[in-house]
Image (tube, rainbow, N blue to C red; front, side, top):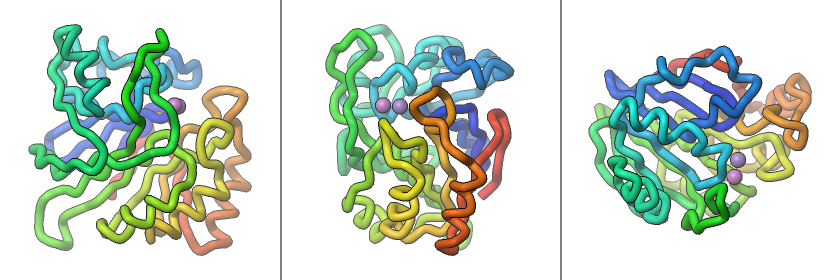
Length: 230
Ligand code: NI
Ligand code: MN
């Protein structure tokens, strides 16, 4: 599994030869101006919730790639009504996609579209790829969320290789709550996201990493456009 960070809360996840894109918000992110959305591959677009900083580039990328949009029922219905391909889910539900088994899990946040219309309830995703025990990988993508005890359930149900957690605070968890989340999730490797894009969520990255280190956990922060393998 190769994970590419496209800035803010946008990830490209490549599993074998399948490209899963999460929460595309690139053209509205000054810090991601070196990323050309026309070069991003997507077979699937996962959307955690309907806020603009998670959906801005969905239509442009889905139009070009014919990607299948996966999210909650309300968000997927919105895009299906515009003519896009979609697969609706809801909290607690799982589906076996070609890239792995995907579960849509709780997040504590809100989810309106930019025009104020209803975007269902916000969520996060767990992907468990197929294969023998040692080859199967599990990733939790929290979406925008507060710290919640529900993360203990995710940790109990999945042997996570990595958790992608918001760390910017103000709208979501901050670094300290993300450390607690990593304990609830029983995961030692965290990829931080949803930080530094705009003023409310700027963080001290050196200090954030040191805080994780002091709890014997690793906070990975990728430059925009950079990738990691798990
Ligand atoms: Ni949000
Ligand atoms: Mn957000």
